[in-house]
Amino acid sequence: MSAPQLSAAACAYPWTYWISMSLIPGGKIVNTHGVRGGVKITPWTNTPEFLAAFRSVTIDGAPMRVLRSFVNKNSVVMELDGVATADGAQTLRGKTVYIEKDSAPLDAGEVFVSDVLGLDAIDDDTGVRFGTIADFFSLPSNGVYVVRAVQNGEDRQREYMIPAVSDFVREINVAGGYVRFRLIEGL
Image (tube, rainbow, N blue to C red; front, side, top):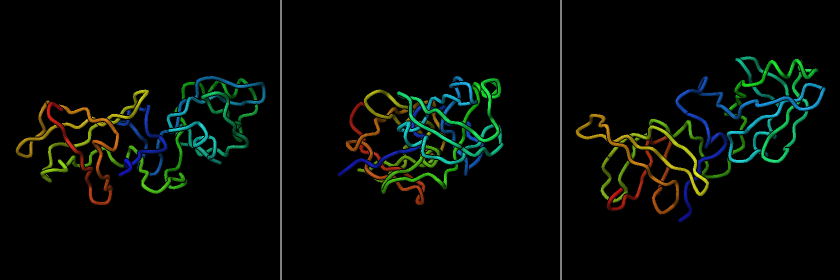
């Protein structure tokens, strides 16, 4: 069985904060690039190529057309309509670049992190809800779900850290409102 996959802006962003359900954070502008107003972006997506493929982005709530984009090492360089100088690009430094969720090409079985946050965590063996997905973060080897435990319907202080690999993640059902996990002793 292959692992259900999280995609797009799936890994490096503190997911508690996103603008709306249609816009999701795709990266952060970390520097300027060149003298014609290019910006260098650290992507928060699975790959820099994913972010570079977008033809429009949103910054500070304003949609911006992407004139040109390319991958440079692990970063994305974008030239944006209306930003024609290095000084103009400098004003965007530190800003978050948002992407239109509906425009994101996901492969079969892939979902966004923003779609799984708040879903019920179900024990695959018993069918019992044991918590709510509170966060997701990436490690070099794989992602990790943070599940806040529930007992008798009440949130508890305990959190489970569950690796995002097929041995543990059995099913992601966004429409159904749950993720099924195979739990092991000591988790």
